[in-house]
Image (cartoon, rainbow, N blue to C red; front, side, top):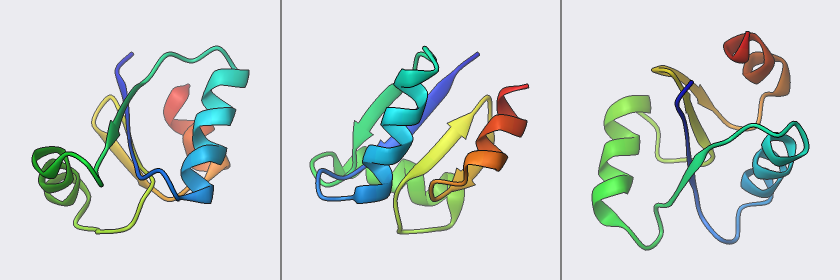
Length: 75
């Protein structure tokens, strides 16, 4: 399972998403879109959104920290 998390350092919901994934021992790749313009463009292309977090679970895009939606995507 491939999980990519697009974040910024000051985002509270990004921290919640990372904490949730770590607490559940789910491996993910994190991209700080505040520092990496290429990844920021990739995030917008995938989600159509500028807000973070954006979570890509095997191509399923979740905008924001939506725990029930994350859990469905992980099944």
